[in-house]
Image (cartoon, rainbow, N blue to C red; front, side, top):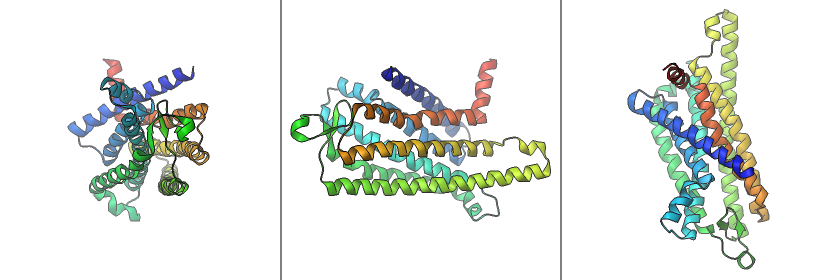
Length: 295
């Protein structure tokens, strides 16, 4: 039953992310994309890889068909998984910041950055990818194929892979740096989310004051902002659940099989729910689906 639930979750995440990725690719190639479209497209690609690696679906099959040894398979699988996890929090934070700038009033301090968003996006992508590619590299040295638990005191992290023993100082340093990065990014997300909520509430009061019914309808910007707020809130909850499980396991140097299953479900929850929220909140996609129904 648990296996079926995880398989259903992975299947739903793959289908939803692939659909959304095709949509954003079409928008990027055939139309003038918005800055948030470029960010959402990259986030969708990251989530697709997260679901695939999280479910051990494609990498395991590829490596087995190529007869690649387990040690290399473990290193690259865990590395890609940690890399996508880091990219997910960074890109989600970037999306939250850029949406806050996009909907900011022309009288605010952020308004002067609106016309520079596309240029900043390129620099932000380069920095985020460079940082995470190097930051996640420590996984290569401390992860490998499972050998003998009693002799080496390895900690199982997947069906075939284990975490090698490491010095307490190194373990604490990695945990401290990772925590500092995550706390900073989550703090930025929560701050921009609070800012967007204030703007939406202020806009709602102005519309009610004017008694203008047409303004009360959700604009595309408002729908996008509400969707990002939902994603940020859901991300923060799922992320810290995963962080608590991972940190506790590393500090105690013990992973229970049940905890591994719960963590896999938690890790895949955000990349599975995200495309569903984005699809349901984007009027362009909704109109396409309605048109397909009429055909």
